[in-house]
Length: 63
Figure 1: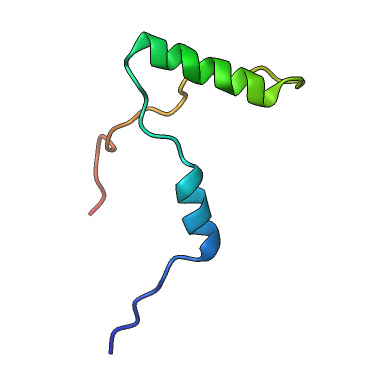
Figure 2 (figure 1 turned 45 degrees about the vertical axis):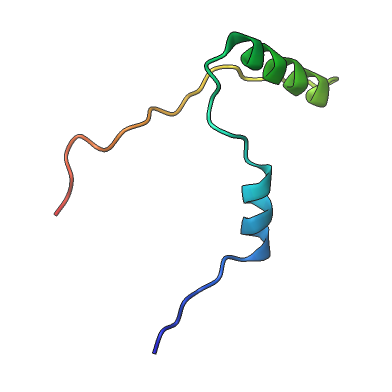
């Protein structure tokens, strides 16, 4: 018997809100930054323009 699980509605909604991968085009980056600033103004914390995650696999895989 297969017990396939469906994603919860919250997961589907989150997937719709996610942005596409980082654009390399400077004009697109500026547009995204401006949109982020407009969406969060006025706010106490500035928009973060630095990606803090380091992509890649772990150096050593557990087995």
